[in-house]
Length: 152
Image (cartoon, rainbow, N blue to C red; front, top):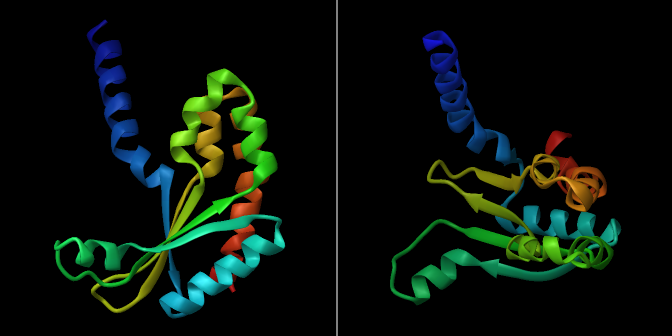
């Protein structure tokens, strides 16, 4: 019995440590922040998504007195049919806290540019039902197309 309980504890600990790296992905971009943002925007529009906002987070941080950051730009992306299919069910309305989908483009202190994304497929799987169908299917596939230039 002690071995079983220890096994559960070790497994839970492993999941707890691994989960952040499974939920969030970071990829190096060969382009500047502006060029990377433009390429993602163009690819998203080609897949039928709307860019509902491009937010230079680093500028907002500075404006409100918290200091200078290297560029951090948030691309807020929306696809109305996907949003509708998820939000038409009352049980899924809480998912709206994660809408619109956001992709970040940022420069680290090493001077290199990175793209941060959430694992839409895993997120969908965690919620199940319609969310899994939408997020784990089309959204995950399209999200990869938005950033496919990073793998060239």
